[in-house]
Length: 459
Ligand SMILES: [Zn+2]
Image (cartoon, rainbow, N blue to C red; front, side, top):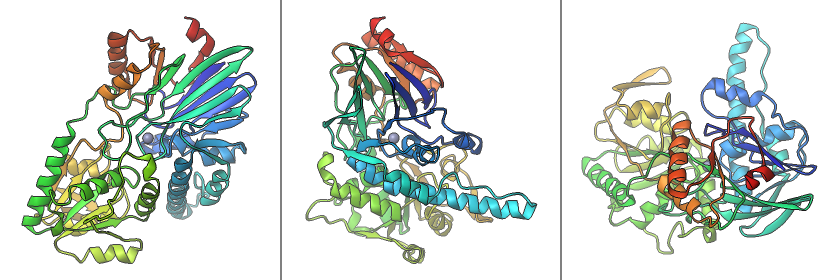
């Protein structure tokens, strides 16, 4: 029995781990590498996996699911076991990712044609996604299933986003048994909508995410205070509010808060627009699956009215509104999507507000705004930044250090841990905390490292 770390090893994207039990080969996640153009080119390199019998997918985020269509193109036609809501979310998210890859290739090929170069193919297209979606096998939380001889899995609610799962794997080989627990991405226990991550009592080895291994989130009450003051003073000032948001997770958390705090936030003075077809589809999915959440997304007598703008024309109509529009649109880091049009129409107006509720990566337009840029360029035009830019923390889908430590602390037998899905700084901080609080045996595997499972337990 061995586990090999193929991705999200000392980094946060491209989650993929290869598990061999007897003659069986199972992949845990098959995520896309995200980051700079150079990093993303690595997705074109075939996965070094050979024959794969089955895949277990922890959740729908592209950095966990995004290379599944490529695996299919490499010849994998076996089952992909995942939670039923993750299967539904993947249909939305992988289709959108494929569409963006097709657009990217189209754009690139226009330039290549002018240079007399051969055309490039998109990383994958919507046909590849359709084909791989046919391989999904839906499971419920807490349902035990044998997915290959000697490999039984049970998915537990991880919080994080809809359908996200912690994967318990009960493995058997030559009479030996081993229990591996793969955390996937763990939710934040103060998150408004998702459940806290399910505690697990026993494991022989834990493979655990460490995204915020060196950070603690601020108190949730402070986040609410900050949102209230922006909405109240924004209405007095007579402009619009733009909120760039990720379509899945962050948008639904925000809508839930707007609904719950409608009176407190004085939202009667705002017309709320959800301007993203993907976010609209994802919100409907969250609504249909409210049994998986700790709260219903909207109440029965909800005062909040959200105008869903599906078409480009609907979206452009919002641009004519001078005041009173609260627009939630993607992308979350302003690196594309409909938010760009709204920025063009509002960024130069001092009475308008831009509210950043998510992490803004280096090199994105969102980051430049957060860093206080005076001017930005949009479609070759220089736009003055006169609107107020706010950064509101605390709306995270990930557990912080306290949350990660608490989740590990529920394992009665203090199993050894391999930390994945984190930058080295976060991983070393979490490793130190786990060692000092629990005397845990913590490893930080690099890409390509292999762990012999039976030797881990006996050591
Ligand atoms: Zn995730």
